[in-house]
Length: 353
Image (cartoon, rainbow, N blue to C red):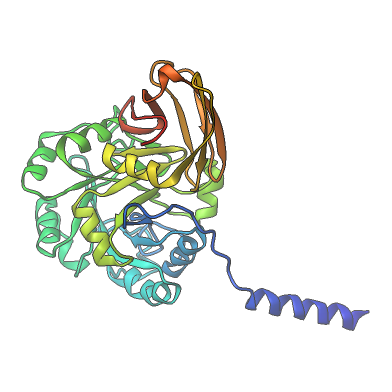
């Protein structure tokens, strides 16, 4: 009996060591030739104020179904420096081989960490993190731009720096006018900032939804009661870093947070048309019976624009039957959880053309 117990224990240990991790694929159809890549461009490791090793971040992202990620450890804030030798490039160098082996697109990045104003900024596609480190935030951002980085303003409404909500200060206007940042987080961690959605639309800035995860991702998801982390959907011509950069420059993103999708009407509409098919079940001339079929892992809520309180749900990988009076055919429906601006959902007619 004792020998059997020992053998069973050894067998279980071997199985645990050899078990292959399972990836939870996120299903979103391609959109008019663009791949919809699931991305998180803001996360931390022990090389700044995170609590996990860089390779753990890669494994978490892969298992969650992400296609691309960026580790963006703080340049200035290094609370573990007494135990871990500061090295701005270490997270990238440690993680990249694991990312390559798993087919994960790893974007080289860092976080410029300053008080408000102007706050924190992520620099993506950097070449030398150490050169960006500077007490002068303008010098830091200029160096990032000189390296060809894509820079975004992080968590503009973070309570620690913006207790009264996000504010576009003169310092931000000066940075914007100089082209020192071209994107913003409309979603960070467990919150989203309505004013940022307005700014991004008015100022042609690229929208992001990022986790800013510091602890193990499962801790974050359980604590915040989230099904999945905030995700930036990127409409890329190909599945590689260069195509992601081109898409970010062209503002082809949608921010996905809980059941909300936020972005420009063009890309929200394309996302709906790629994700939702339709079938006419019956048409007696008075009423059209229409089945909408959701082919994606996104969820949709829709209501007639004339009756916004009459909401129908179309959950992920499901279908719903709607009955539309003949006189209402072709009139706009609000896709309630797809926001083009705060309080302004996407509108499309039914049936979809």
